[in-house]
Image (cartoon, rainbow, N blue to C red; front, side):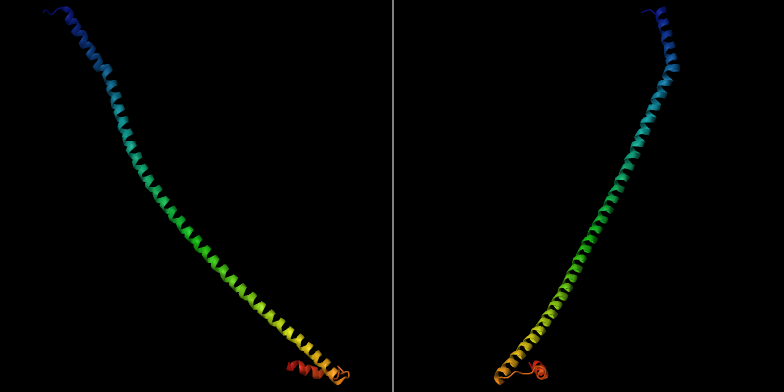
Length: 156
C-alpha cells in the first residue's frame, strides 16, 4: 500500500472539515442542545410545582366542601328545630283557642239554661195563675198579684 498524494489531500480536507465543524457547526448545536435541556428541566420543575399547587388546591377545595357540608347540616338542623318549634307553638295556640271556645260554649249553654229556667218559671207562674183563676172562678188581678208571682218565680 502506498501513500500517495490523494490520500494526503483527503486527510487535509478531512482535517479542515473537522476543524470547520468544531469551530462553526458544533458550538450552535451544543448551545441548542443545552438550551433544550434547560427548557426541559424548567418544564419538569414547573410541572412538579404545578402538581404541588394542584394538590394544595385540591386539599383547600376538600376543606371548603367539608365546611360547606357542615354549614348545610347546621342550617338544616336549625330549620328542622325551628319547624318543630313552630308546630309546637301552633299546637299550643290551637289548644288555647279550643279551651276558649269550649269555655265560651259552656257560658253560652249556661245562659241558655238560665233563660230556659226563667221562661219555664214564667210559664209555671202563668199556669198557676190560670189554675187559681179556674179554682176560684173569678179573675185574678195581675197588678195586685205581681208581687205574689215574683215570689213564686224566685221559689221555683
